Amino acid sequence: LERVAEARILIDQARLLTLNAAHRMDTVGNKVARAEIAMIKVAAPNMLCRVLDWAIQAHGAAGVSDDFPLAQAYAYARTVRIVDGPDEVHRNQIGRLELRKHERPDQATAPR
Image 1 (cartoon, one colour):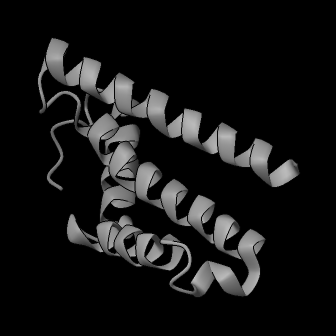
Image 2 (cartoon, rainbow, N blue to C red):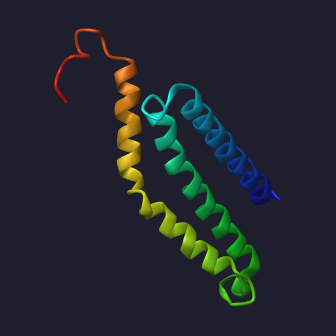
Image 3 (cartoon, rainbow, N blue to C red):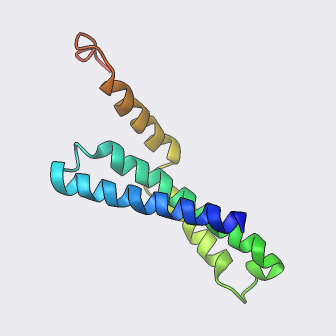
Protein backbone atom coordinates (compact mmCIF):
# COMPACT_ATOMS: atom_id res chain seq x y z
CA LEU A 1 0.00 0.00 0.00
CA GLU A 2 2.87 2.35 0.69
CA ARG A 3 4.11 2.09 -2.92
CA VAL A 4 0.60 2.64 -4.26
CA ALA A 5 0.35 5.80 -2.16
CA GLU A 6 3.83 6.95 -3.22
CA ALA A 7 2.96 6.30 -6.88
CA ARG A 8 -0.21 8.39 -6.54
CA ILE A 9 1.80 11.23 -4.98
CA LEU A 10 4.44 11.13 -7.75
CA ILE A 11 1.82 10.98 -10.50
CA ASP A 12 -0.09 13.94 -9.09
CA GLN A 13 3.12 15.93 -8.60
CA ALA A 14 4.10 15.38 -12.23
CA ARG A 15 0.59 16.17 -13.44
CA LEU A 16 0.42 19.43 -11.49
CA LEU A 17 3.93 20.40 -12.59
CA THR A 18 2.86 19.77 -16.19
CA LEU A 19 -0.27 21.87 -15.78
CA ASN A 20 1.78 24.68 -14.22
CA ALA A 21 4.31 24.57 -17.07
CA ALA A 22 1.51 24.63 -19.66
CA HIS A 23 -0.17 27.56 -17.90
CA ARG A 24 3.12 29.50 -17.78
CA MET A 25 3.76 28.75 -21.47
CA ASP A 26 0.29 30.03 -22.35
CA THR A 27 0.46 33.15 -20.18
CA VAL A 28 4.08 34.33 -20.29
CA GLY A 29 5.58 32.39 -23.19
CA ASN A 30 8.07 29.58 -23.56
CA LYS A 31 11.16 31.68 -22.94
CA VAL A 32 9.97 32.88 -19.54
CA ALA A 33 8.68 29.38 -18.69
CA ARG A 34 12.05 27.71 -19.41
CA ALA A 35 12.53 26.53 -15.83
CA GLU A 36 9.08 24.97 -15.61
CA ILE A 37 9.56 23.27 -18.98
CA ALA A 38 12.93 21.87 -17.90
CA MET A 39 11.44 20.67 -14.60
CA ILE A 40 8.74 18.66 -16.30
CA LYS A 41 11.27 17.18 -18.74
CA VAL A 42 13.03 15.72 -15.70
CA ALA A 43 10.11 14.98 -13.38
CA ALA A 44 7.61 13.21 -15.65
CA PRO A 45 9.93 10.62 -17.25
CA ASN A 46 11.58 9.89 -13.88
CA MET A 47 8.19 9.42 -12.25
CA LEU A 48 7.08 7.12 -15.05
CA CYS A 49 10.20 4.93 -14.77
CA ARG A 50 9.85 4.70 -11.00
CA VAL A 51 6.14 3.81 -11.03
CA LEU A 52 6.63 1.26 -13.82
CA ASP A 53 9.54 -0.30 -11.94
CA TRP A 54 7.34 -0.71 -8.87
CA ALA A 55 4.59 -2.26 -11.01
CA ILE A 56 7.07 -4.70 -12.55
CA GLN A 57 8.29 -5.69 -9.08
CA ALA A 58 4.73 -6.14 -7.83
CA HIS A 59 4.02 -8.54 -10.70
CA GLY A 60 7.16 -10.60 -10.10
CA ALA A 61 8.35 -12.64 -13.07
CA ALA A 62 5.12 -11.83 -14.92
CA GLY A 63 6.16 -8.16 -14.86
CA VAL A 64 8.93 -8.86 -17.36
CA SER A 65 7.03 -11.44 -19.39
CA ASP A 66 4.82 -10.93 -22.42
CA ASP A 67 1.77 -11.46 -20.20
CA PHE A 68 1.80 -7.78 -19.25
CA PRO A 69 3.03 -4.76 -21.24
CA LEU A 70 5.05 -3.45 -18.28
CA ALA A 71 8.53 -4.28 -19.57
CA GLN A 72 7.74 -2.70 -22.95
CA ALA A 73 6.33 0.37 -21.23
CA TYR A 74 9.47 0.64 -19.08
CA ALA A 75 11.73 0.44 -22.15
CA TYR A 76 9.68 3.21 -23.78
CA ALA A 77 9.75 5.33 -20.61
CA ARG A 78 13.52 4.96 -20.30
CA THR A 79 13.92 6.06 -23.91
CA VAL A 80 11.81 9.16 -23.27
CA ARG A 81 14.29 10.20 -20.56
CA ILE A 82 17.04 10.37 -23.20
CA VAL A 83 15.16 11.77 -26.21
CA ASP A 84 15.05 15.42 -25.16
CA GLY A 85 18.50 15.45 -23.62
CA PRO A 86 19.91 13.91 -20.46
CA ASP A 87 18.43 14.85 -17.09
CA GLU A 88 21.73 16.50 -16.14
CA VAL A 89 21.34 19.07 -18.93
CA HIS A 90 17.87 20.04 -17.73
CA ARG A 91 18.94 20.07 -14.08
CA ASN A 92 21.88 22.35 -14.93
CA GLN A 93 19.50 24.71 -16.73
CA ILE A 94 17.11 24.71 -13.76
CA GLY A 95 19.99 25.42 -11.39
CA ARG A 96 21.34 28.29 -13.50
CA LEU A 97 17.89 29.86 -13.81
CA GLU A 98 17.31 29.49 -10.07
CA LEU A 99 20.63 31.13 -9.20
CA ARG A 100 19.94 34.01 -11.60
CA LYS A 101 16.85 34.86 -9.57
CA HIS A 102 19.10 35.58 -6.60
CA GLU A 103 21.91 37.52 -8.29
CA ARG A 104 22.69 41.03 -7.24
CA PRO A 105 22.00 43.56 -10.02
CA ASP A 106 25.73 44.20 -10.54
CA GLN A 107 26.29 40.44 -11.11
CA ALA A 108 23.55 40.13 -13.73
CA THR A 109 25.71 41.64 -16.47
CA ALA A 110 28.70 39.34 -15.90
CA PRO A 111 29.43 36.97 -18.81
CA ARG A 112 28.46 33.32 -18.47
